[in-house]
Length: 235
Image 1 (tube, helix red, strand yellow):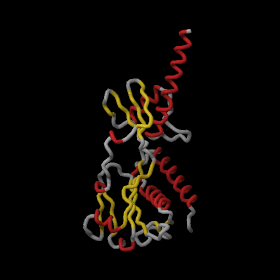
Image 2 (cartoon, rainbow, N blue to C red):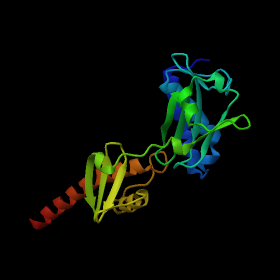
Image 3 (cartoon, rainbow, N blue to C red):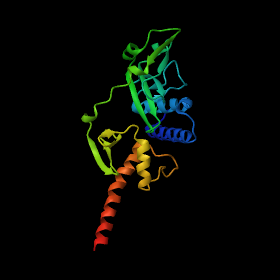
Image 4 (cartoon, rainbow, N blue to C red):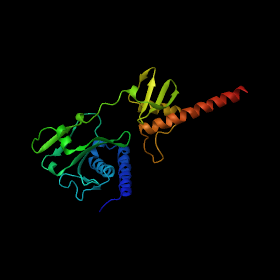
C-alpha cells in the first residue's frame, strides 16, 4: 500500500516516540536496531518523496524515490566514528542510491551521514569479502566547522556560566574561558537552580537542546524578577 506524505510523517513521528519510550525504559540504542531501521526507512522515503519497498529489504533496496531510484537505506545509532556498515555485495546491482542515517538518541533527531549514488558509495567501501562490502563510519563523519565560524543566536549568563544557542541549534556552555564538554550535566545543575523540570509533559527526559532552550529562556526572566524585587525593596 502506498503511503501519502502525511502518513509517512505521522508514522515517523510515532516510531520516534516509541524509540523515546524504549530509551526511557533503559533499553540501549544499539539494541533497538529494528526500530532504528524502520525510522531510517520512513525518513528516507520522506526526504526522497518516495515509497517504502513492497517487501522488506526487497532485492537489496528499501525505498523507491519519486524519480524511481532504488535506495538502500542503512541506519545506525552508534555515535562517534567507530563501527561500520555492511552491504550484501550480491544485491548491490539492484541499488541506485545509498542513504546512511544515524539516529542521534541524545538529540532525538535523524542525521544524514551519506546520501549518494551507488557509484560514489562503492568508492568508500572496502573490497568485497565473503559477499560482503564494508563501509567504515570514519569515512562518513565530517569534521565540524571551527567554533569561530558558527554564530551564536542567543546568549545568557548565570552563576559564572555563559550559555549559548548556536545557529546550528547546538547548545554550548562556557565557564572561565573554557568550553565545557559534555554540556548536559552542567545544564542539569543550572536547571535545578532555576527550578526547571528535567522532563517534558509526556514524562520523557529533555534532550540537550530542549534543556538548553529552557535554561536560556528562563534566566532572563529570573534576572528580571530579581531586579524588580530589588527595586521594590529599595522603595
